[in-house]
Length: 80
Image (cartoon, rainbow, N blue to C red; front, side, top):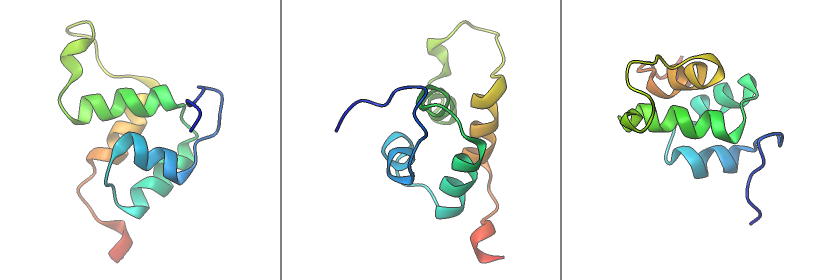
């Protein structure tokens, strides 16, 4: 499989490859945001508490922050 380019629109399979096992509604919500692969990768790092790799004290911002919010949401909207 070719590497993802940041300008490429992500597919559900690509989101799952980056994020791992996530609920369907989260994949749909992430895709609706139209993030880049880099945005999703950064958000996954933060969600997995690997944010020490970046500059300390800097908040997560922009699209990566929006993806992070989806990844860390506790409510299962799929059952609503």
